[in-house]
Length: 82
Image 1 (tube, rainbow, N blue to C red):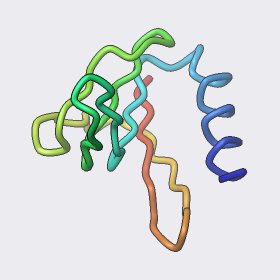
Image 2: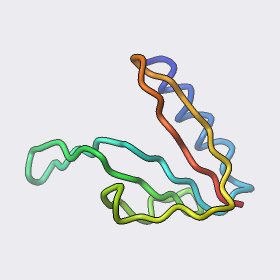
Image 3: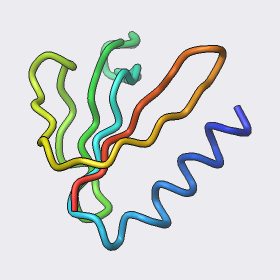
Image 4: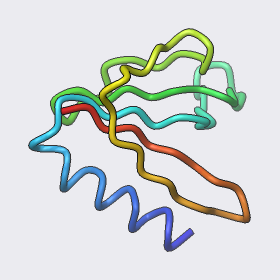
């Protein structure tokens, strides 16, 4: 959990020079329906969440930089677009 917090902190402090950030394979908490929604991609544009959709519906551009993070033995990916 500490690694995830550090990664998120790094993400939000370093995206100023980047156009968009894609955080893939994320579980979203739907507070209105009180359920977890797995396998989502979160798109961050100009330091704000601009889109959340299933992994299959969002196309990540080819000119991205990929950052890998391992948590609980699973590889998590984030994509940065300049």
